[in-house]
Image 1 (cartoon, one colour):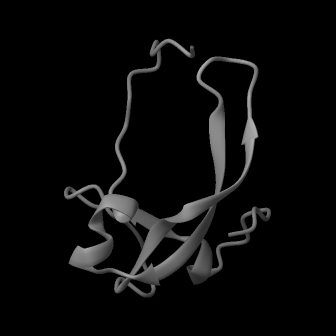
Image 2 (cartoon, rainbow, N blue to C red):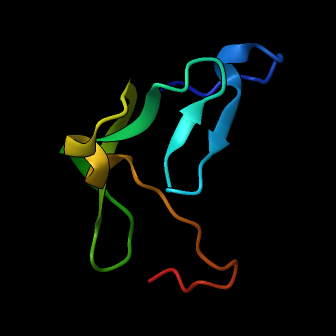
Length: 79
């Protein structure tokens, strides 16, 4: 995944489904997926955060734990 300025390209339009999946509107069989592997640690807080790659992969029950996302309250503590 690469962040680019929005230009109304269909490849930049996502939907957050009720099941927690983030999918491309144009290709709903692809889900935003976090990698198992991490390439670095980051942050100054304890515990350190693991930096993981994001990609679009076919939605799959076997990848559900890496393809399910959620929202947290705006006042969630960052520690």
